[in-house]
Image (cartoon, rainbow, N blue to C red; front, side, top):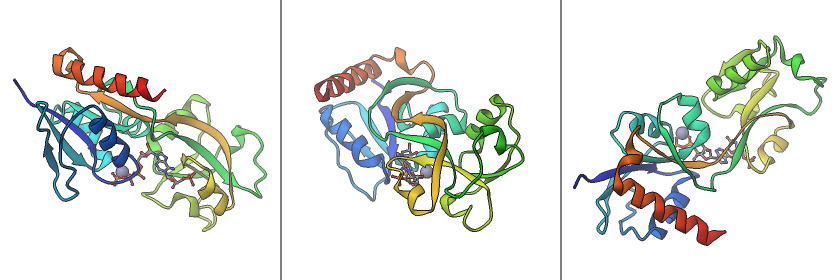
Length: 210
Ligand code: PRT
Ligand code: ZN
């Protein structure tokens, strides 16, 4: 029987909940922070610990059969994978936010404005649908400080509590997408009976939490 591989985040916001979910599925494995791969002793499965950004491609390319990652990362990387199950954690929304003292009241006023983001693909599609042409500035982090530094007129970033926007003098202006952690699989992985078995275990863990 072929051993399956599931990719989860090595460290960060989704790591703990991903590990907890798999443990609650009755899977026995060591959660060594230093190892990149952990065998499961009671199921033909190996766990790969990766940067979240790499998970969609690993799954698309079949290096991992399954992955747990935020929908935002999947959409941004534009991979072809199967969505198998929403997991109910890692919830957040991708929002456009503007400085509190702004004069923007209508989304069309973003025309010609500079928007800083780490999500240029999703933001680009959203603006195109609305017929808006903005100057999308892709930066790799600390997006929230960019309006204050005069680098952009607005930002597009993930928001959960809203505390980060607030402490940077920004207010949410438009919802681009909502996201949560999902289980994804390589195309066709859903036909594998071990994958089916895991999905069923995950679904009963989720049901027990309701
Ligand atoms: O190292 P690696 O590349 O694996 O991790 P990462 O640093 O890229 O991601 P990480 O661990 O920060 O987030 C992993 C996933 O968690 C994201 O892709 C989302 O799907 C999900 N998630 C849920 C969030 C948030 N909530 C969130 N609030 N990801 C990031 N944030 C950040 C946001 O970017 C902003 O800087 O938190 C800040 C805002 O939080 P609030 O609570 O102040 O609104
Ligand atoms: Zn990342």
